[in-house]
Length: 397
Picture (tube, rainbow, N blue to C red):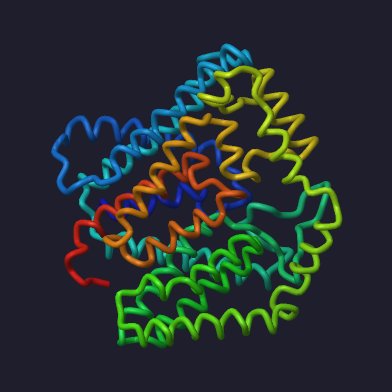
């Protein structure tokens, strides 16, 4: 690996807190490191002004980076959070500058995919191995606490190690290879099953369902003859049918838990209702309520009371939570980006299209750009889309 690859790998590992090492114990240190990297991005871009290659998503990256700063105004005027605190929080938006740095690095798609697959492979390996090492484990987002033991679903310890997006993209890449390459089909199938196992062990039903739905619809995007499309489509039906038949063995307790939750008050629905009406002023709806900090009265109310006591988390309600945080203008820009992506989709490779469709499926419950680490990951995603559009005239895999 060259220096640029090592830098990219290290930066992406900070985005997932090095696979949630010791329960994100060093999260604040890593966040500070990401902020320092953002300062480096500014100087690097200023020095190396030449931008090789077309940046098709440049406009949207800039808007995603700067629009959240507008939420500082209602956060100060309406919620009385100091400008200094809000600006300090918003500096993490500068992680989007990594998109422009990548265009100057000109790292190849193949080199980036090697890094994504490596991170996704280790993520799946840790999810699997720690099922057998409990109560000894070092990588986790949810573990044993003084109040409760680690959650177990379907006999699986739910560590929820950060790195899911890397595992998902790796799965879609090998699915892409399986469809388009006649060579090493069994190898590609093995890695598909391996990464699908990691996704299953993560134990988040909406992601699992969305991934399987993407497998089902993937044949419709293939640039192959109609006969092969039908064969792959039937294969998808057989796969999903088999999973349905053996659902009790694969997802038994998870499905049962979902059914039980339907009979109880759904806290997510309560969150939707609350945040769709949480507008103390018109400016909050237009520009957003802003990001709370625990040292402000707004942060105390939102973090300590609404989230920790009542369980009303913005992060659980996807695009509605982002609407509450950054306002309707931000959401309109995101919708415009979605239309632009679909317009360019014929020039974008299958694994990237499926990754994007997964994002759309999960919007009601999870928004893709939630924190600094996400900005780094999706900077790479947009860069890969740019590269794909540039090389769309060649039939490369």
